[in-house]
Image (cartoon, rainbow, N blue to C red; front, side, top):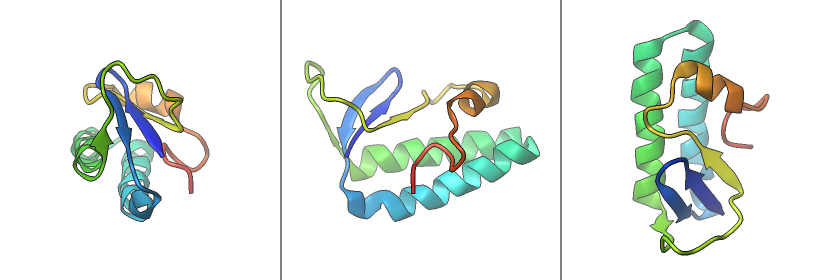
Length: 92
């Protein structure tokens, strides 16, 4: 799966990592629904760090279609809410 972190670039990520990422996505969704800004910041950072750690960065000149687009690290709670689907940022 190709994942884009807005403002950073693309990462190739194996499907075997989706379970770990979905746990963080569920936490992020709960924090957003409760308005927990501090928790939202912490979990968004952890989600993006997990993608960077588990994935393999694509070259800057690569233009692969992204299957998943994640917000930039400095995205606001409202900006991320606009990106959400019913199941959060990560499908599944």
